[in-house]
Length: 349
Image 1 (cartoon, one colour):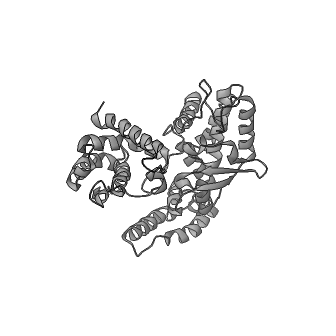
Image 2 (image 1 turned 180 degrees about the vertical axis):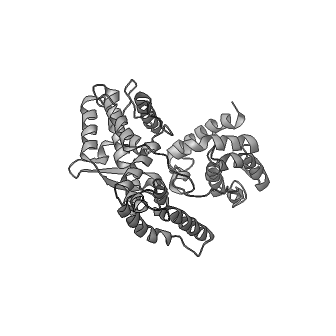
Image 3 (image 1 turned 90 degrees about the vertical axis):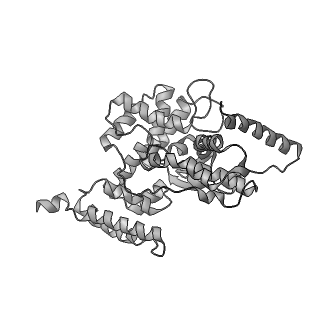
C-alpha cells in the first residue's frame, strides 16, 4: 500500500477521536456543506486524491503551483480524449479544504489547469423504442431478481432517472395518493416527478413479491444475504444484464443508455425541449439541446415546433461572457445543421 493511502485512515481515526472527546468541534463534512459534494461523488475522487498525495506528499504546506501542474499534465491528454475523468475535480475539492484550514498558501487550488472540452459536441447513444420494450419484457417477475429488475428498468426508461436516483429511493419518496415520486438528484436538489401507472405497478409487485422484509427504508435491496440497499453500480448492472439476456446490439451497457433513450423517445413524440429538460432535471436547458441532434428527419410538425423552441434557447447564453459567446455560436451552428436539412415529407414533394 502506498504511504499516502496508509496515512489517511490514521488521520481520519485521529479526527474522529478528537471530535468524540470534544477536543475539536464536530462539523458536517466540508465538501458537503461548502461545496455541495455528495459521498457518491467523493468516491470517484478517491483515486485522484491518493495519486496527488502520493506524488506531492502528505504535507500540504509543501505544495506549490509548479508541482500541481506537473502532476496533472500527463493526464490532460487522456481526459481530453474522454478516456478518463478529469482528476482536477477531486484535487480542487481537497485543496479547497486545505485552504479553508490554512494549511497552505491561499488560492493554490486555482493553479489546477483546466482542459478544453466542447460542450454538446457528441451525440447521445440510445436504443429504439422496440429494443427498450424488449429489455423491460425480458424480466421474469416470478423471481425476486426479475421483479426488481423490471421496476428499475421502468423507472429509467419512463422517467429518465439516473442510476444514483434509483438506488437512493426510499419509501418516503413514493407519494402514492398523489401519484408522484420525489427524487434527490445532483446538487441535493429535490424534484417531484409524476409516477406513471405502469411504473407504480411494477414497484408494488416488487415490494410484495420480491423485496426482503424489514431491511430498512430503501426501496431496492440486494437479492442475496446480507440484504442491503443496492448501489448505483448495481443499477447499471441491471441494464447490462437485460441487454445480455435479449441479445440486443447496444452502443453502451450502462443505465444512461436508457436515460438517453427516454429523452430521444419523448422528442420524437413531440414533447417540448423545456419539458424534457424539466423531467431529466438538467441544470440548463442548453444541455437538453443535444437530443435535437439525434434525429434530423423529424416530421414537418416536429421540425417547426423544434425551431420555435430553439429560438429561445439560442438566445439563452450570456454574450457578456466569453463562454456565453462561445456557447451561442455553437448552438447556432448546431441548430443550422439540424434545420437546414429538409424533412422527409418536404423532400418528397
